[in-house]
Length: 331
Image (cartoon, rainbow, N blue to C red; front, side, top):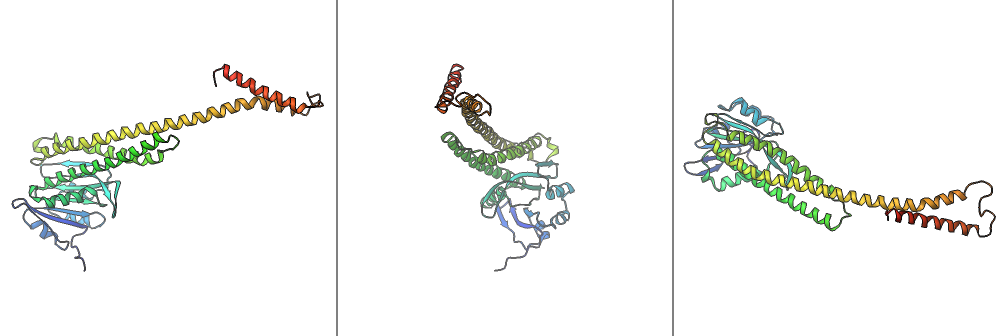
C-alpha cells in the first residue's frame, strides 16, 4: 500500500478543531495548504524542519508575521517567548524521542499562535508533542482555541519531565545502594550522565519559567485575550517541575561529594599504609646500606656469624621504629 505524498513541505500532521461541535479531524498529507487555511474552526499544523522548503512555505502564509516565521525556523538552543496582541511565538524545551526508545536529549519545539491556527515545528521527534496530540484527539471537546493546544503542550511537557525525574531518581537510588553497601566501588561514571542531564534540564527550565512569568505579568493590551491566565497556570506547573529537578540536582551533588569523600578516604588509607611501610623499612635499609659499603674494617666482616648479627641489628632497627611510632601515637 502506497502512502499519500504530502503536498506541504515538512508535513508531519495537521488537525482541524471545531470548537462549536467539539470535533477534531486529522487531515491527510495530500491536503493543500490553501484548503487547510480556508476551512472552518482552527488548525494545528506540525512541520519538520528537516525539509529545507519549510521556511519558504511559512513565508507564504498570509497573516503570519516575520517574527513568527523566524521563531518557527530558528535553530537556537534556548527558550524564547514573544507576545503581542495578534500573535504569540517562540521556542520551548522538550525531550527528544528515538524510533524505538525515549532519550534524555534536549529538543526544541518552535511555535506560533494566532486566533485561527497554531503552527509548530521541530528538527527531531519530540516526546511531549506526540502525547499532546493523542490527548487532544481523545478529548477534543475541551479545546476551545489554539491557546488550549499550547497549554496542553506545556502540561504534557511537565508530565514528561516528571517521568524523566522519576527515572533519574530511581537511578540515584541504585547508585546510593552501591555506594553505601560497597564502598570500594566507584559509581562516579554512572552518576555523571545523570548529573549532566539534570544540570542541562534545570538550566533550560529556569529560562522557560522566567519567560512565562514575564508573559503572565504583561499588560492586557500586550497579549491576546486570556493569555495571561494561561501563562499563570503554566508558570505554576513549571514551578513544580523546577523544584523537583532542583531537588534532584542537590541530591546528585551531595551524592557526588559523598562518593568523592569516600574515594579520598580510601586514598588516604592507602597512603597511610604506604607511609607505615616506608617508616618500618627505612631503618633496615639504612643498616643494609651501611654493611653494603665497599670500605675496610666493616663490623662483622670477618666475624663468624656476622650475617646473623647483621640480621639482629635489622630486627632491632624495626623494633626501634615501631616504638618511636607508638610513642608518637602514629600507630
